[in-house]
Length: 198
Image (cartoon, rainbow, N blue to C red; front, side):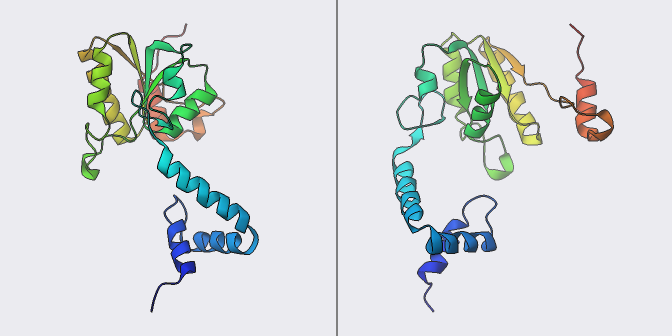
């Protein structure tokens, strides 16, 4: 029996993270019952985005141009380079902090079991960028997972090889958190990496 167009739509929606069969079915029915114009706009925008959005040649973030607006900005501090795992991480730092340096988006983290090594993360390109000079600090902002920590270690070694000071985002007790409610791993890491009071 041939697959219907509705079944194809539901199956296509399941590629989105966190969208299972039931959610995809609700989305498809909603678009077809109430949002056909919105569905057309979504379809056109999605097709255009897939066609026209690529990666910045400097930082690997998503960009419609060869060099993204952040890398092209003269107001950014080129001496600081912040390495993040994903464009979402870059956006979170940009929105939550006053950081005015540049970024390098890894588009993942080292994970040999998944076939993700240094080449897949563009670390050869990062090495060339560090070798150019000008960067004095590589801020490593990978997630505190096993793969994120392995990636951070690799990045720190890479930075040192090029005479660049590596730094790591602090991890530990959240602001406003109470020690009795912090998980053991976080508390242990925070305790082990404690520093002097200013």
